[in-house]
Image (tube, rainbow, N blue to C red; front, side):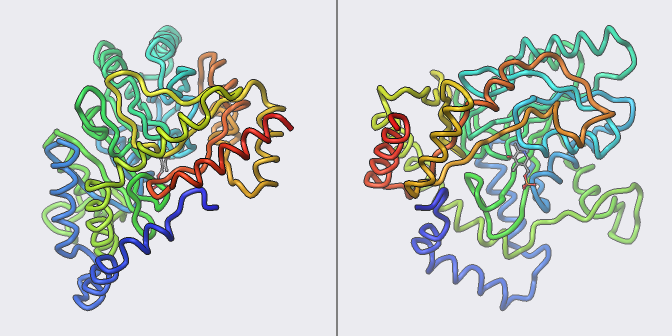
Length: 376
Ligand SMILES: *Cc1c(COP(=O)(O)O)cnc(C)c1O
C-alpha cells in the first residue's frame, strides 16, 4: 500500500504526460519555455489573483516573498509552531527572528488569539521590529485567514500565506493562495498538485511585490539578466515541470480534488465510532487533503498504533513530531509564546495514506487495520 500513490497517478495520466514531457525535450527550451508562462497565467486565474511567479520550490517561494518585503536582521516574523520546518527556516535564513505562536487543536491551523499574544509580547519587549505574519494551510485546510489577516492588518504587518500544502483548498469561496499580501505554494511531488521534482510559486495581487520577486528569482536582474540591481537568487521552474503541471492541473480540476474529498468522506464513514479524533472541516471551509490526520489519546497509544499499522502493511506518518520552537536549528535566534496545543498535537497525531486514487477497498483495509491496532 502506498502512502501517496504517485505511480498510479502516472499510469492514469501516462499518454498526456509522456507527450508533454517529450514535447519539451524536443523543443530544447528547457528554461523559460512557453509552458512556464501559460502555467503562470493558468495558476493565477485558478487561484484568483493578479500575479503568479513560478520558482524553484515552495521554500524559495516563501523566502522570495519575505525578501521582497525587505525582511532581515532585527525583524520579527510570526510563524505557527505546528508546521513543516521550512515555514520558519526562511525567516532565520534571512537573519530575522521567527516568533512561534500556537495553533487550534481542531483544525491544526494558526490560532489568531495566540498570534496576537505573540505580537503584543514582542512589542512590549521592544527589541525586535514586528514585520510579518505567516500562517499555513496545514494538511490542505485553509488557515483562519480572515482573522489572521485582521490581526496582521491591525498591527501593520505583512501577511504571508504558506499554501505549500493548501493548493485547491477554499475558504468562503476564495481559494488558498489568494490570501495574504503574498502566498507561497509548493509543487513537491507529494503535495496536492505536484510535479516530477521540485517546483513552487508565489501568488500576489501587488504589482510591486510581483515585480520585485521577478527580479529576485533571476539574480536580482534590472533591465536584463546582466544588469543586476539587487542581490537575489536563482530560482526557476523548469519548462519540463511546467509541462507536467499543466497535465496534473487538468486532472486536479477535472476529478482529483473531488476524488480526494470522496476519499476523506469514505474514511470519515469507515472510522466513525473508533477511539480516535477524526479531522474536521469547518462549515464554509474546503480542504484539498494534503493529509488525512487523526488524533489519538496519548503518545504511547499513537506510537503503538503506528507500529501495529506498520506490521499490518499500512504506512502512516507523524506530521509533525516536534514543535518548531524546540528545533535545534532555531536555538539562539527565536522566540515563542506558550504552545500547549502544538505540544499535544506532536504527541498524538497520525496521518493515514491519502490521495485521489484511494479506492473503497483500500479505505476498508486501512479501517480494519486501525481497528485491530486500537484493540491490540
Ligand atoms: C512542503 C512545504 C514547504 C516547502 O516546500 P518545498 O517545495 O519542499 O520547498 C513549506 N511549507 C510547508 C508547510 C510545506 O509543507
